[in-house]
Length: 176
Image (tube, rainbow, N blue to C red):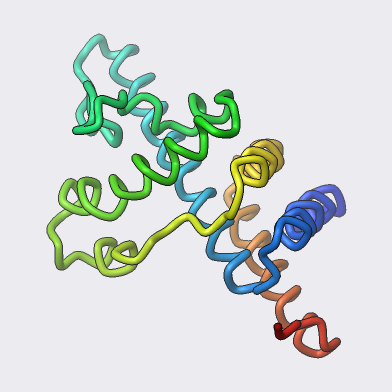
C-alpha cells in the first residue's frame, strides 16, 4: 500500500509536469517511467560494482560501459547518481542527446538484439520534458521517492493509473 507521503510526492511531481507544460497524463506517466527505469539501471549497475569489489573480480555485467561515447561523453555521466548533480542544462544534454540514444540502440544490442522486447518498447523512447529546469526539478523529486521496497514501484504505478481514471471522470483532460 502506498503511503500518504509517497502519494504527496507523486502528486507534486505530477503538478510539476502540469505547470511545466505537459498536461497529457499518459505522457507524464511515460516520462516518469523512463526516468524511474534510468534510476533502476544505475541501481543495478551499482549492485554489480559492489559485488565485483567484494569479490575482487571484474564486473560480470556492465550496464554503462567504460569509456566514452562517440560524442566524447563519459558513459559514467549517463548514470542517475551522477547526472542528478549536474546543472540543469548539462543534465538535459546528457539525458536527451546521449542517454536516450544509448537506451534505444546500444543497450538494446547489449540486452539481446534489435528484435528483443526491450528494443521494441524502447525504439521510440524520447525525452519530451520541454525544459532543462523541469527535468532537473523532476529528477530531484523522483530521487526522493523511496523505491527500495519491492511493492513500492507497483503501488506508484497503480496510483498514477488511478489518477488517469480520476482525471477522465472529472473532466480534467484538457484540449487545446
